[in-house]
Length: 374
Image (cartoon, rainbow, N blue to C red; front, side):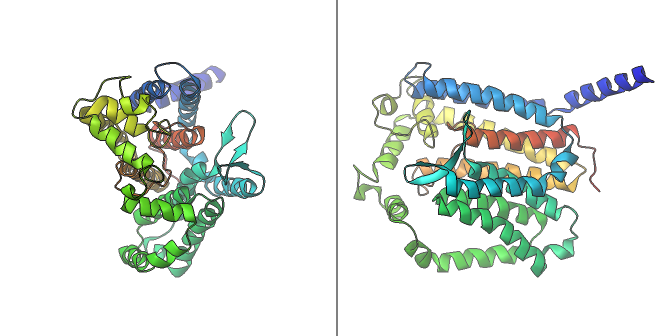
């Protein structure tokens, strides 16, 4: 009997291993290699701090994603509310005891890693709302109670992140939550009225922005008003992207980057350096990798028996799409600079940790695609 059970466990493990989405895994590995090569370029063609740190984080978090993949999707369902509450507590802790940098309190010192809870909230708010709507009947989704409860779940962490202050990440948290409401079946008229109300109240919202946030909006509208100050970053970014041309200047040959015209090139503006060195062709290939990743995530959701898994995969895949669009639009001057990292490509442990947890839960949905949650 013991031998039979042990054989069954082994058989179950190998079955789960065979159920992994290897196309998605391959694309994530390719994207990780591209990000490491680009980070190597930001360090001037040497293995310096950013390259070493990015490599270690990618290896550790990718391995962690594989471990998460074998955990039953029911575990993540049961963790939905608790994980949200824990990250909410971390946000409150950050406001009171967090690390202050550049006038903002966004990080908690864990000694081995400075973690940014707001990045984790972008994933766990999806997990929480996916659990909330899992058992809900279609006619109850649009009830006043459900709508109010969902908005509280979204606006509480959003408010805590705004206090830090970090308006860009707070908007991304709100988008992650709103995406779940969309897929849960909330009446589209609410989205239309919300957009209309936001446009009408835009002048009032701008009046409450901090001076540096107002400056970002004005710089977006006219970068040339302060070409050596607030507009410098976006002007240099557009010059770098444009100078890459069709085929790019070549690996380690980006002049805007190497001559230090482009600040912060390893974080939110990593796509600028990549585009300068690999040009239009390289940028299209990078977009293709992201497209395949998003498609595979959506497909895993479509094949899952669990409505919770469907909601999470659809919402997470759409959120990744939105993060990519916002980052690339930002560095091309199509949107104001909001501090949105490019998933996996940009330097930053918290962002990569959150992204890999998200992909781990997606892969868990794939390895347990026949599991239904009552």
